[in-house]
Image (cartoon, rainbow, N blue to C red; front, side, top):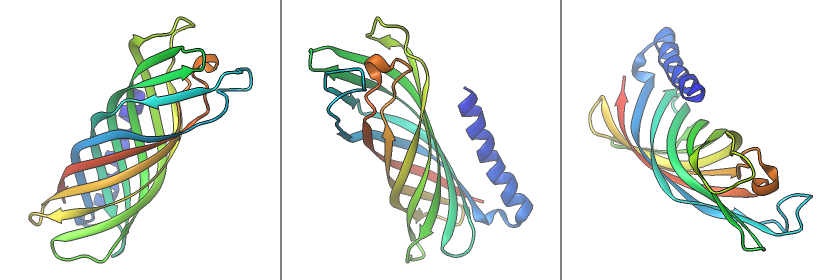
Length: 212
């Protein structure tokens, strides 16, 4: 809850900054759906220094919702903050045949630099690069008897591209592909979940935009 309130407060700060510095036409707000599709996990030979068994980790696919604030400065640059919420299940297994799962409620806060690409009156393509945090908050759906999984936050690197489609002076549609590189959560039980593995997560989204 604290993460949600903090990120929402930052979105409001975007609006306040735009109002204070000049025309609100530099600010846009988007609301929409975002897929969360783990594309690859980079394996290791062991989960941690104390484990002799190879450990693998994977994540279920899910769909969440996203809120996006973007402030343009100059003709070719913008600063973007996106806040996403979703729910998925993390799976862990080892060579002994043990498989564990933890269902989590996830919050993502990603800040990105936006580079505007050559555009037309209707299509406004862009590329992005940035980073932020992913917060994994376990609920009561888990299969482990070594303690209760705890909330874990991991840093993430973001890259992507997309395009804004103009509908009118105030309204538009944003179609975006974003990739995240992040570490698998350990839920503060490293003996079971401490794989240290890196994951590549594909996050396509579609948003309804309002331009101030």
